[in-house]
Length: 126
Length: 145
Image 1: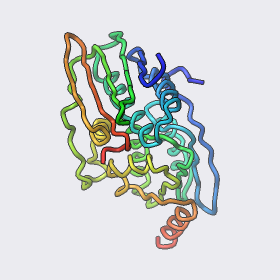
Image 2: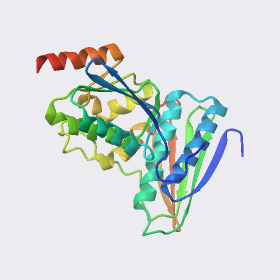
Image 3: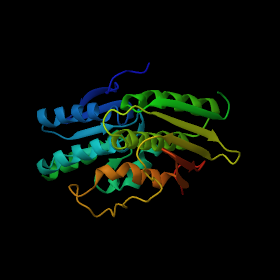
């Protein structure tokens, strides 16, 4: 069950909705998995042009390394104006983002529908 | 050892975190702890373990880190971490983010210890000989409210 080696596996799948890419990580985003998560999002930043949404419904744990990866992605996307929205956070993951002050930096909404609406509104206004 | 107390001993290498997490998850499941307490426990242990492994040693100095967690009668968790790394007093408060920094200014490195202080009700550090002994109380409600 436990993967040996520096990087532990994290399952990540993607889906497309309209012009938006939705990334669905599953499990823990922590010291062992954050780099894989970050690399996955960076690939979408390099290859895509539309909004990037992250569905955290199946993420049951985020540590400071996971937060850091989320912030790195926000920082990379900021100059392009491409929308970046997190949704589906558990109360515990939401609390860690709140305590860290990240809710002021990264848009977070409850549902996929809200995330898509926010992304479309941003696309329409630019 | 089973019951309401568990000790996990691991070496001071980063990938041992996976074993630590598996043992903590088993403890949480056996005791039926809340999601809030589970998240706080995993987070505090990870931040302190990773901090010690990253900064506590000169080169490839081998060490055993012992992590003990017990459920107290009042429902709080009592966590004790013992290592032989260089002296490091976790109980000293880290810099508090003001929320007004730009993305570039945020000191991400200090975030882990900041979170530990936010989640813990009490943090005590003692140096015994060449050992750091860090004791932490995690409130039953999860985040220290």
